[in-house]
Image 1: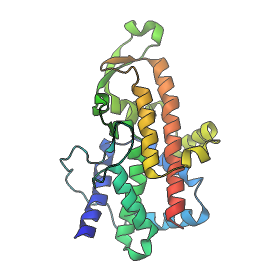
Image 2: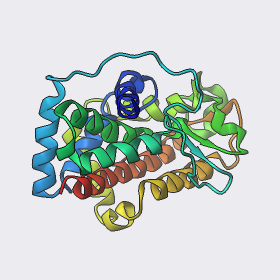
Image 3: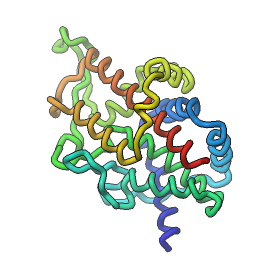
Image 4: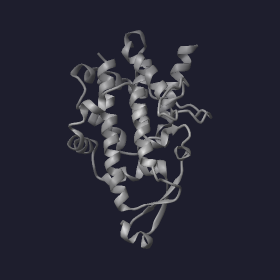
Length: 259
């Protein structure tokens, strides 16, 4: 019964990911970036397991009503200490163990675990999925996206965006026309020297790091604040760093569990 319940959790990740993770190019670009840093052995196993995707397509299931589902829950000190089975970190830890001990699991269980590890790495690095104890802004708020620069912000047209959507979609749309490989190349150029620093640690260490990243971006933030073009350029730099972290960490995790 426990194993069956675990598998249902894994399946649900893929079915509701689109509403919470990076839009469009974000996921494939991160995977393309990660592949550059995977060992030959891990890359071979990764390809073998992903070939099972068509054989065992993700099954649809109802989204749980628990607000903690598919979230990264951190305490006030930015630590991930939860044992809640629907938490992004807990799901990823369990799925990693399935892949680590894959000889004891069926093909269906392996592909479901691979989906969870891959997709949850994206969720772990998505600001809108992170909840920090005592920080109400992490529950979500709206910003006003301006088409103008700071100097003429009052004259520019405003568009209301959820904070989460700003990071999940608006920033990535600035790379319109990019292929996943092109985006991965840009990340390598920008953060090619950060592999060891970004890869170090455990899944829970990475969650804490993302809590720190989010906290920094929320300093001075408030509902309905104006985000102009200059601020978007700043955010784009932050987003590229976060995507590079996700890619390096996905490679590091898969290198470890697919030995």
